[in-house]
Image 1 (cartoon, rainbow, N blue to C red):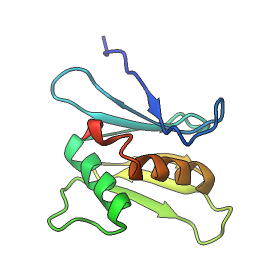
Image 2 (image 1 turned 90 degrees about the vertical axis):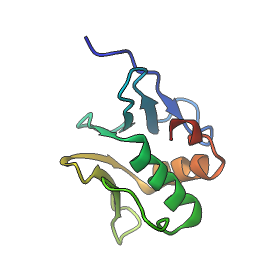
Image 3 (image 1 turned 60 degrees about the vertical axis):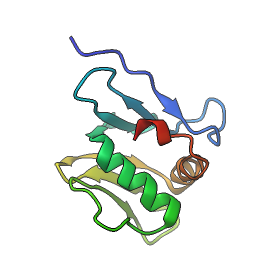
Length: 120
């Protein structure tokens, strides 16, 4: 039986709105999970704490850290302002979490405020 996950969203996400949520498995080996509550596919990206740490560091500094870990989390932002934001892991490229720029921005604000540091 899979352990129960406790999901956390950014404090910048409005109450009741769909947002990006992060959780960690409480068992070893520890895995980090990322989903978007409004994603109709219900996709859940699962990655390592090291890869999630690289994502956090990249979002805080706006550049990947030297010696970035692999596997990586890739984020694709479409050129149009209304284009979806897609997040996937290089180890599971078929699992894609989809969100929009507003929700991604609230997640990034939470990252920059250190709200998800304890997951890495």
